[in-house]
Length: 484
Ligand SMILES: *[C@@H]1O[C@H](CO)[C@@H](O)[C@H](O)[C@H]1NC(C)=O
Ligand SMILES: *[C@@H]1O[C@H](CO)[C@@H](O)[C@H](O)[C@H]1NC(C)=O
Image 1 (cartoon, protein in one colour):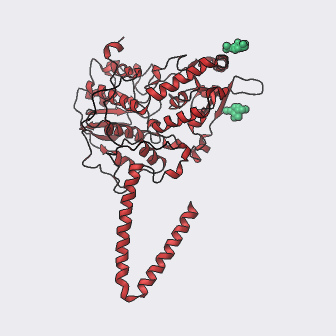
Image 2 (image 1 turned 180 degrees about the vertical axis):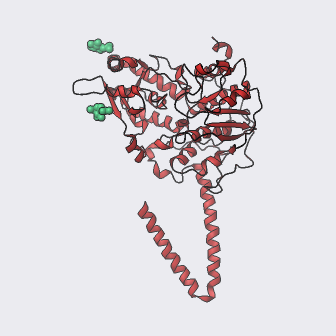
Image 3 (image 1 turned 30 degrees about the vertical axis):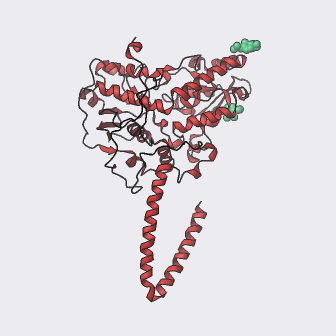
């Protein structure tokens, strides 16, 4: 790459030297030199603007080369592009287009599909504020927990940062909300909310009388906390470890499942990851096959440092659907890996989790996964694999049920609908008028994507919503049926 670039540059400068010599040594033609200069500037500028636009629309100008064709989904049917990304100057797009669409009349019929069952958790998660509503005092009390405050006023989004989150979690979380605004312009209500981007839940039940707790959005929750689960950043991409947006990954998983059929997969339980994030994972390493013991587990520790240097090129998650059984085990808290493991068609051996994200609470033991007790880890894995190999049809059916859940109920469309309904239900509880706080900046796809490069830019282009949705959001399960 470097050599190629240098030689092209060499050729250009040689040609440029010849040209300028010719014109400068011919005094009568000095005017031509000036004209040529002006002409080149015009040409360069217009081609730059052209390419910027083309890249914005296709999202593939620089990135085609970096992803091999086998990992690129087949050409989608041409999508209507109503929102081209307009980067005026890559690094300096700091203002949002003035004519940003904030309203859109859906031309489609009023027909809508029913939301998946896990949407009922939206009301459960907001239950602590059901009777009191959410007051400004409650939100302000959450300031010390939130990494950022997101404000939506008249369809525009504003962010006030309190502290920088790990890697680009905050960036891609906000990006996701911006895409929701593009998908349903004019439908997302005005609101003000706090978001915590760490691993563990932050609002402990024991610290607050439930009804006065600050409402804080976060990626997961456990029995002892009141955080409001929201889809994590990886649905829009995790640039640092090369995990592409969920829409692309779903396609990759479907392809992977076609490549190796269940019965042709290795009849063992597979796990690969960073073992140093929790004691449980360290315990799992002890279940690995060794000279004297075979617990039917094949576990691999990822060399995080080495992989980071190589851009995680050896760790494509869709290439890990090679075993009949896959182990899911939590890290520091919940792990974004759950959806990639469950989507593999393999039977998931789920080590009993403590933390839940927005969809995992609706998974059913022995229907979507096989439960494993953390206190009996190696033995449980061994007998689960044995059971599966004795009952291949049943084990395969459990694997397929999980994949079906992932492919159908967790497709990007429903991820957006979940965030849409969650934000709406939250806004309904608000007892104050959202205002743009001092120090907040307006954010839009332009201010976020234009200055990005590398995988971050690629993933934003890949996950960008190109036009408003023509159909209505799915309809929530009615509250009467979900009340206990
Ligand atoms: C587990 O065993 C396999 C096969 O012997 C080996 O390749 C792998 O590195 C082991 N994993 C760990 C974490 O030691
Ligand atoms: C699997 O089948 C073998 C042989 O029939 C039997 O010994 C073993 O107990 C079975 N294991 C389980 C977990 O069903």
